[in-house]
Amino acid sequence: MGPLTPFRERRFLACFLTGTLAASGNWMLSLSVPFLVYELTRSASWLGVAAVASGLPSLVASPVGGVFADRYSKRALLLISGGIQVVLALVLFAASRAGMLDIGLLLGLAVAMGFASSTQTSVYQSFVAEVVPARQISAAYRLNAIQFNVSRAIGPALAGLVLHRFGATTAFLVNALAFAPLLVVLALIRTRAVERSIATSVVGEILEGARLAWRDPRLRLAVVTGAFCSMFGMSIYSLAAGLAKDVFRVDEAGLGLLVSSVGVMSFLTAILAVGLGDKIKRSTLVVSGLVVYGLGLWIVAATDVFAIGMIGFGITGIAHVMINVSVTTTVQTYVPPAFRGRVTSFQLMGIMLALPIGAQLGGLAADFVGLPTVVAAFGSLQIGYGIWAKLRMDGLRAID
Image (cartoon, rainbow, N blue to C red; front, side, top):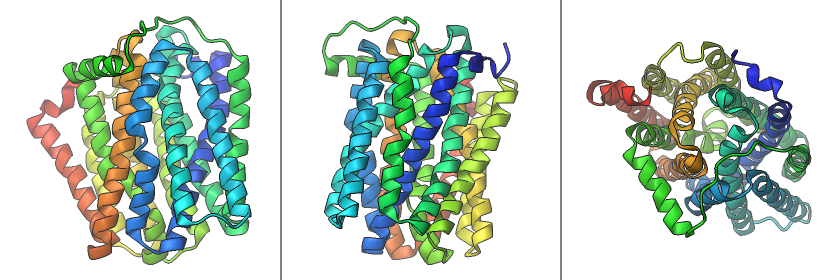
């Protein structure tokens, strides 16, 4: 079985293509909202608040979405959550067009979209296993990493262009339209039958999934490492609007290019990861990725030259794939099918909750010491964790 075999499954291919478009729309939104927040407040602290507003709902939405994904049809759940995201994006569009969008309404809608997006992301990650045969699951999740990173390259670049040429109002409309093809595909396809959990209580099932994820050292290390990478790595992208404006002195298009450099390098690295398969141990990729992540952030912190900043951001994109493809493959390889939704949701909750916490801490600190200092500190923490894992945690070999 080759690394591209899942593409022979029409269901997977259709979801891959339309899911890439929908995810690109989400990345547009993730850039447009912070841009507007910074335009309204000119404060890095408010960027952190916006990240919290978008990410904190995952504390509830991700585990509940995981329970429902194990109980019920993931396809139906994706249709509902995707439909809600479309409606909320249209509300953003209408409010912006009417001139009613202030910081309070913007953050309130960000919270609502955070709930819908967290649920959709949690369910979609476990849904992939239902549109390919069981033997293709690992390969499908590597390809899914390409989908994620293609969208991260396309979405911010398109957002920067749309913001620069047409403004945030149009960006919100494009975000809503980007979901339509995926919803059509989800309405038409059929998924393979899988084992489902027996419904008891939501809290009980969440705790059951949490115990499984914590007691299995492979799953525990994967979840914790992904969360750490998010808190002190991915969180910097939420502060990119401040870096673009105050450090690199570029406009909306430059902001889009800055964030897209992460996606471009992530995409190229994900292609390489698909080709390599399991030829390199996951533990080696993660430990090396942590060090590479830190080096990329150090480059960003050390310069005010836009081109060099893009290089630093691009390096973090390489590291992101090295770490996150590895930990995601570990989770999807070792989790029992009846727990797939819940354990996947805990992995995503760790990532999505850690990101706004890191952004809020970084934003607050940046108002006192400056964004470059915060970026350098976060890079040092990434390298420190990589060295600690190598010397004191058996090089993370448990995840292999």
